[in-house]
Image 1 (cartoon, rainbow, N blue to C red):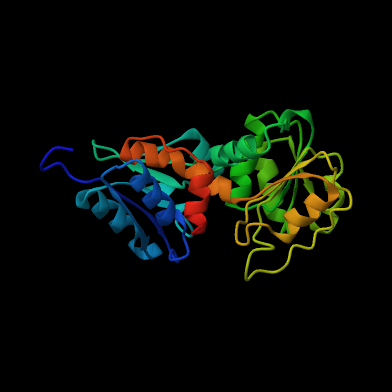
Image 2 (cartoon, rainbow, N blue to C red):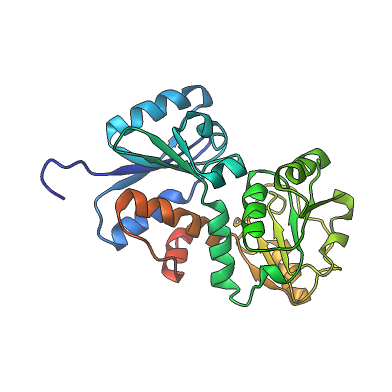
Length: 279
């Protein structure tokens, strides 16, 4: 970096945002690779979002991660939206380009896939049905990724059926909607099972979907990572399924943004996990 060149800044915006582990992650990568830069959390109210996106590039910001409640809103404020972000209906990564345009992308789906490939290398998503619990933004990213990976059928159950029906409308006939009270039964013969709800998260209601029909050959993932080993994953493991926690998705979805902002592709490994866990 030459004298007078600006130090690149990035951060995560949301409200609330103090709980985010992204500053730990990006701060670790910056130190690990000896890069100039800084990454900070910013609690920005919905009413201030548009003004913030205009001001931050002027302050030296090269991009942002985006979390609740701004993931949908930023699409309307971006100049360029990737196809996958448009399909999912949300963005989690912004790049402030040198020409002044805001580029919006969604890396949640690719982070989900990379996490399963790393931690369940035998996973073959095209070999059988998938089951997705939940119908929010994370579910949309997971479904888009599973379709891209060739899953022949994706069974979805959500506590509000209308939201699950919207997924079928948006993603097509591969999505099969099931009643929430029958969610346990839809797991039969599934090779991939994913919890995208907040059930089982610390401070949230317990995950109570029965897993009696879960195949021991299934790969089971929980996007919740607080706690790291949820009751859902523990029960799936007792049945014999391969389980993958949600922390890896957080790590992998962050890597493309870091590379664009700071110029180095970071490695997602055990040292990275331990840094984010505070070990």
